[in-house]
Image 1 (tube, helix red, strand yellow):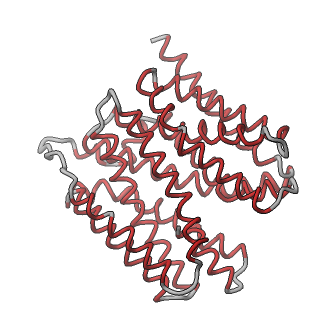
Image 2 (tube, rainbow, N blue to C red):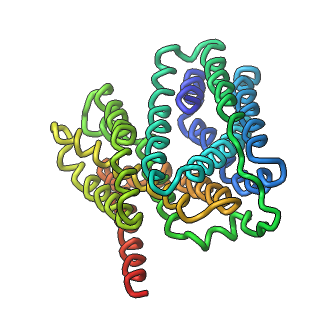
Image 3 (cartoon, rainbow, N blue to C red):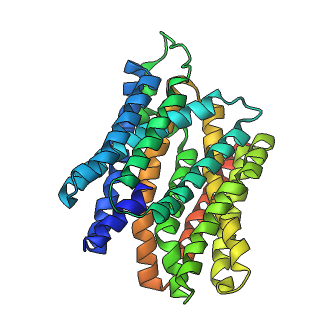
Amino acid sequence: MSYPLLSLILESKGVSADMIGVNAAMMPIGILLFSSVIPVASRRFGARRVAIIAALATAILILSYKFFDQLEAWFMLRLLHGMALSTLFVLSEAWIVGFANNKHRGKIVAIYGAVLSASFGAGPALVGWIGIEGWMPFLIGASVILLGIIPLSLVKEPPRQENEDKSTASVLSFMPKAPVLLFCVLVFAVFDAATLSLLPIYGLEFELSLSTSANLLTVLIIGNTVLQFPVGWLADKYSHRIVLLGCALLAALMLIVLPFVMKTIWMWPVIILAGTAGYGVYTVSLASLGARFSGSELVSGSAAFAIMWGVGALVGSVSGGWSMTLFGPNGLPIHLAIVYALLVIVLLYRIKQAMHR
């Protein structure tokens, strides 16, 4: 909700598109800066307490945008907003994949992914319904976050292990343990940020109507929401690396096909499949994280995921725009296809390595 709401408010005040983009970038920068702190804070103060404090801080920050209604103040507020949100993402994802058992972890993570995607679709729709004037959008945003404290307060944390190696709580020490999973998250984040910010513009470049261009993103989100459960089912049934390879390969193929089917009825199923496979990489990566790690390592892994998502989101927004500027509108899907093709190569290499062990 906050991305379109704040951007539209700034646009209504005559702020340039470049400055709106720079202001929006403060949120992923906040995620990048704070994610490595979360494992240390949760170990020292308790993950549930830290999550509840982060939820309260998020609600206060949402209201603060209206209190401090100036562009200069919004730079700091969005930085703090990213820090608070990263805490909620890291801890909630660690709980979800940690509490799910191995038999159903993929399906449970897929449900989480579907809910997350649906919320990303519902936020802009809510802004379109209630508008951007007055206090109402800020009050609704803060209220939703405050309601989230209820389930957070019911989480039962596993007892801490006194002999647990505290070095595992370091995000930097975690990264060498799962480089391929982290690369999967980076690739997904590039895809996610580029499509969220540029897919409607891509449609306009093909002279589609404004509503049809906006629906390209809606249909992509439908693929993320409705079809993640089959991806989770496959992750529970087959090797995670094989399912990741299938998702990356399908995403690359659909993105290559997309320019050839634009302005035809076939663009809709192609976009749905691209969204399903593209987002499926993240779903399976989360399931794999929960299967391989536990305790403080799981929280560190989730924090590392958040950092890679922040890096990918920054890279995706910038590189997607550059690809369209340098190579025309089809530079966007081809650029993203190349990114997924790189992931295919990495996964094939790791599968080959595993077969020769």
